[in-house]
Image (tube, rainbow, N blue to C red; front, side, top):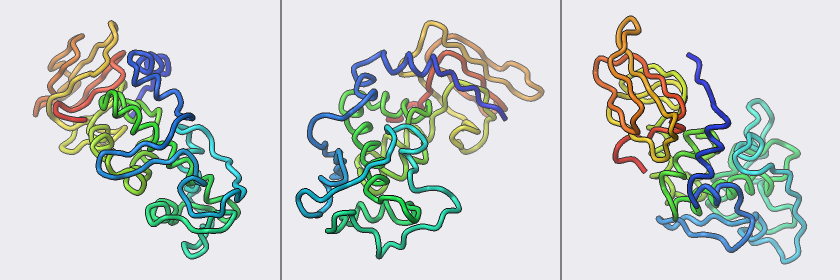
Length: 246
């Protein structure tokens, strides 16, 4: 199954609302507190109890890139043992930070740089969700922030944003997907009703049944995937969220 990404479409949705402007960066201002108590800091040195002035080295890329979202997730690289996860200048990480870093920091990598990537994801989701929760979920659905990166960061560092991740997990973007009993991000879509938070004038979709026969098609921002559906194709719609999601 091949999913077609549309970079131009993704770019368009990120400029449709004020929330999208927040997605383009979050380098200024103080840390935000997620609804649920999770905090997302702007730099690892602000969140750890290292001595004032302790040096840090950041090699993380902007959030949303593979390097940022999984800076410590090289599959086969030996990882730093949890007991040795400490800030480069001394001190210690918080319990939440240690949870995020556990098993994610390759030997020879600055754990503060890995942590920075997770905190950046939390910052982006938190800032955007304050204005438009749908836009935050859309950023994950379209791949601007990967599902794996968002799930790991939110679970450990900003659990208040879990509803955003859940909404994205049940949504889907432009492309062709199979229909299954359970949604699998990037692969299959579950039966049910969906909506497009930020549609374009070119949004179109087609639901197919057995042998590829068209069951329904349209250019509206809502659709229903019936029990008889076997596949669905979307174009120019950017991201679909399940009704009631986000």
